[in-house]
Length: 148
Length: 144
Image (cartoon, rainbow over all chains, first blue to last red; front, side):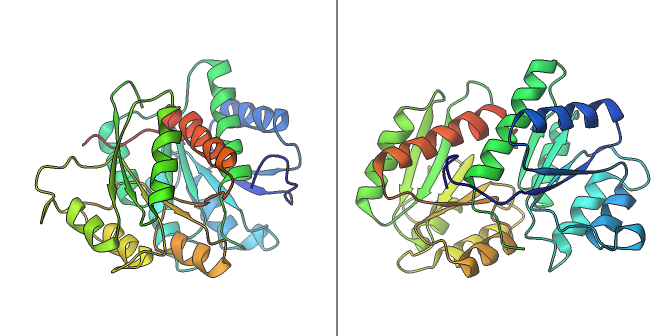
């Protein structure tokens, strides 16, 4: 599919505990295609509740894609990833790990847990925007995503 | 991804598509070493360095067609993603099919992403360029 074809609006789940990074991500998505809907949760437990539509998330939309930080409170990002990818229903949702960690061990473990891709969060603002827009372009306009 | 050349394994039985992929990859900013196997069994041999493939590198990325002779792409995918030695290699399904069933099965078997191969040559080159701009530029790879 090319950029020129109209897609329905996509649901993105951002799992990010740093409010600054969450805000930046929001801004970056707004600059791109503002038909996409960014849902934000701040820890690993909330992420799982959102995905399983538990409690206050009973009406939560099913995400087309998940952006997941690794270092999260309450439930670590690696555990969230493992849980998603072991679930028969949730496993096919692409998970883009977006994290400040550059540890090689993390990269290996993350791919072994079946993350779809691993991206380092840039420190520099313009680069951060570039990365988010690139993620949006690649995953939301270009790749074939699984139907919901 | 840095300046190191990328070892890409293309599993594709159509010689025209192989040629097209090779040409499109030449336009990438990043240097790509393209390795090709034309069926699913040879792909597995390549990955296990057996048969005629004893001296091949470990790929950084695999482009995998679905409709392959000898072993279907989904069987190759399942084998890669269930082997601890291979499962961390990103696999892009690159196929003419846009059947929902194929897409669902591929992601459920842990394909990293699913791309429908454009028929148009220019769109195909655009696709490779998009991969170059995102995956080869921003995505972190496991160190071999």
